Length: 86
Image (cartoon, rainbow, N blue to C red; front, side, top):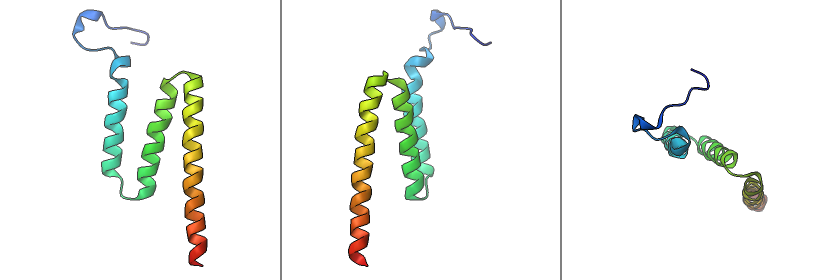
């Protein structure tokens, strides 16, 4: 039922306490099922996106900037390596 909360005496942890474990489990499943590096990258990006949604905005902003900068540096290295082969 929408809005219904379990009583505390069920013995099961609340969803907010198991959410990160479930997200990590889903990442492991997606990584195992991935056949290409692009699928692995997409799974990792989705995991990062879910982590950014769980933390306060200022922490998410810093982490997203750092991840974006790392991706750009990696892409530039690949582009320059590709230019050397031509």
